[in-house]
Length: 333
Ligand code: SAM
Ligand code: DTB
Ligand code: SF4
Image (cartoon, rainbow, N blue to C red; front, side):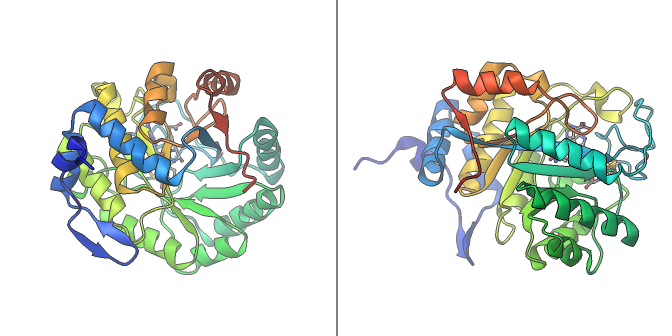
C-alpha cells in the first residue's frame, strides 16, 4: 500500500507508555501545519476507527451557583473582579436543579453537567452537590460537575454519590497560563485532575481557543491533555466567548479554520476521547459547526444556555443534526 502523504509528513508520536502514546509539542505542531484537507482526512480516519462518525453525544449545562467567584480567570464573566453584569447568586435549590435535569432529559440530552463558580468547594457545598448528583443520576442521566479545585476526600464523596465525570479544564498551555489566571497554578489543576482520576471518576478536561495564545501554545495545551495518563475521557474545546467587562473581551476572534484544526488535532492525539464542541457555537455558523464534526467532534453542549451565556436553541441544533444526517446519541449502549 502506498504511504498516505498526509500521514507520512505529519510528525509521529515519540514514545509509548502505559495505555497511551506520548506526544511532544513539535509533533502536535506538525499536525497543525498539515494542509487543512489532509489534517481533516487524518482526523476522520482516527474518528471512524473508534466511533460512529454520525452520532453526537449531547450534554446539557446548568449553572448551579453563579457569579461572585474570587478567581481572576481573564475570560470568565463569573469572576467577581470584572463588571460583566453577572450577579452573584446562591446555590440553586434541589427542586430547580431536578426540574432542569428533567427538561434536559426530555429534550434528548444524555449527560447533565452542573457548574459552580467556586475556587474550591467547602465541605457543606460538596454535601449539597453530592445530593444533587445522586438525584440526577437516579433520573437516568450521566452526571458531571465542575466545582473548582478539590481537596482530600471530596472526589471520593462525589464518586460515592454516583458522579460519572468531573470537569476541570487546563484551559491553555503551561507557558501561557500565567497571562490568563494568577490565583491558582497549573499544578493546582493537575493535582485536582489526579484526585479525580484516583477516585475513579472519569475526567472531563479541555481548554479554550482564542485567549490570545499562539499556535505553539495551543499545541502545548493539546500535548498536556494528550499526555495525561490516561488522557481524559471527555475533552471540551471551547472557543472564547468574548464577554464585555472581562479583560479578554477585546481579543480578536481566532481564524475559524484554526479552531477546526484544534478539534482535529485533539481527535488525532486522543483517539478514543469524546471531543466536545463546547462554548462559542452561538458565534459559529452551521457550516463551521459541520466542519468541526468532520474534524472529529462527537459531542456538544445542548440547550439554550451555557453557564451564563447563550447557546444555540435546542430546536436549531436538532435541525442542524437532521440536515447533516446525524443523530443524537441515545445513551442506549
Ligand atoms: N469554577 C470552576 C472552574 O473554573 O474550574 C468551574 C466553572 S468554570 C466557568 C468552567 C470552564 O468554563 C472554565 O475552565 C473555562 O474553560 C470555561 N469558560 C469560562 N468562561 C468562558 C468563556 N468566556 N469562553 C469560553 N469558555 C469559558
Ligand atoms: C467547559 O469546558 N465549558 C463549559 C463547561 N466546561 C462548564 C462552560 C462554558 C462557559 C462559557 C461562558 C459562560 O456561559 O459563562
Ligand atoms: Fe471562577 Fe471558574 Fe470563572 Fe475562573 S473559570 S473565574 S474559577 S467560575
